[in-house]
Amino acid sequence: MSSSYIPLQPATLSFDDAGHPFSASYGDVYHSRTDALGQAEQVFLRGNDLPRRWQGRARFTVCETGFGLGLNFLALWRAWRADPRRVARLHVVSIEGHPLERGALRAAWDRHLPRELRALADFLVEQWPQRLPGLHRLEFEDGAVTLTLAFGEAAAVAPRLSAHVDAYFLDGFAPSRNPAMWSPEMLGVLARLAAPDATLATWCSVGHVRRTLAAAGFEIKREQGYGKLHMTVGRRAAQAVPGPALPCADPAPVLVIGAGLAGAGVAQALALRGRQVTVLAPDDDAGAHRGHLAAALTPVIARDDNPRARLSRAGSLRALHRWAGLDQAVRRCGTLQLERDVGRAAALSEALSCLAFPEDWARFVDAGQAGRLAGLPVARGGVYFRDGLLVRPDRLVAALLSRPGVTRRAGMVACIRPAAGMWQACDARGLVLAEADQVVLACAAQAPALLRASGLLDPFLPRLAQMHALAGEVTQIPACALRGGPHCIVGGEGYLLPEVQGWCVAGSTYVHGAARAEAGAAGQRVNLDKAAGLLDAGAGLALRGLPAGDLPGWAGWRAVLPGRLPAIGPLAHADGVWLATGYASRGLSWSALGGDLIAAWLCGEPLPLETDLIAQILPR
Image (cartoon, rainbow, N blue to C red; front, side, top):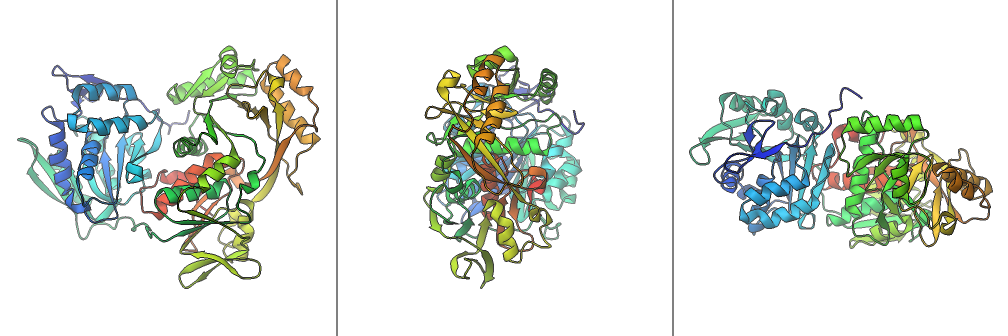
């Protein structure tokens, strides 16, 4: 286990003699013992001059240290609802090192939540995330109110946040109980996110905290707080260290080139935020995924929770949220991920124990348990992911592109060029097909050629220049040959999917240097053998006896970059041009995440991914 990985531990919630929520770990109460709502309104809202400061704005961002029981967020949300001149979009980023489990949160609220907040609390608990490290984006009021929960130790999480903060709620346990939360390093990191007119408020008025905040660039005052207590308020000083540049939030339409999983993910994310999107592609259907019966989305885990594993987890969680309700395209059936042999399975079990992920997200199962989950005898044990998704790719793409605000147009783009502050997409004859201030290239393996023809590839993007197209195929197996097929996705060296329209999809092949992507006898034999290796000897023998070459299937291309991570984000050398490409064999993993990342960037929101992970996927 890497020394940098710190398992996320849940809060140890108890109640004092008067029934107030109390942290046994820190020896401190979660909020005022007299009137929690009154404290939130007096200290954090009035201390930041809210709601007056957000009135008339397009967006406003609050950063909170210590989410706790969520009372400050609920009070803020309540004030936003009550204000007829409220900000159009309210974003809250809240750091929490020890998140409560859903049941514990409900228990605390049942005993001590002000009546005025209970209806909003019900909406919050419905979306309450699993106890997994990283950023969790929750959305309310049709996306007008967002909550980004940053789960992890504050010292590790805070430097990875990207936001343009208008107001700070400095909460959490007392400096004497949790000094790391109030350290000069921590407050300095947070201050670097401050907008030019940012304010702060906290119930804490001890001298060294006020001096630290002043040193971080705020003009600090000690004022009468809630009840008989004092509080601290501050406003960013005129000569403070510059904060982040104001994010782009131009509401103009966006042009997306490409109508596959990447382009559809971007289009959906922008449309959900009220942006008009034109999607330009050679045809008006699912294109590359036509005939692709089914695919799987499953996160990966690594013993050290490395960037690839963290990105995969973030992508699967975004997809689960973004695709909720698309029942004709997406089914949550769970995934059973098997290792290649018993020794590797034992190592995986040990790694999972060290990672301390919640068992309702991932748990190790032995061969017997795995067989019962799959409904078929399997070769060995492995990890069961409850949230594994079975996806109909063509239906998913069609559903995402059918959002109001998305317009689809047919056309083959040969290059893009700047003209009068816009980017024009042109065909091979130089005719303009569409134009926009912002253009997203989501055209898979065609992206390098398009960039080169536009003068934007060499020498700026050496990694993109190494992209190659990798062919592969999947095979459809009659479900009756597998007693109806597995109940969940079974993955490992290959995969076998639950029944769809009488067929179980098995995959997949990887063919380097292919001239065409096509299904055939050789590829079908590879897929049948891979699927057979996931099952016990008897079930595997039945698969190996099927006639390779006579089965239906699908073949396509993967756009692969060195390192097999995608390229998502802005081009540093071409303002207004973005990439969402190189999704390789994990297009489902990156579709929703890439879309939300680009859309949040364009709309001036806190980014839903940590900066160190963004650095891994920026175009280069």
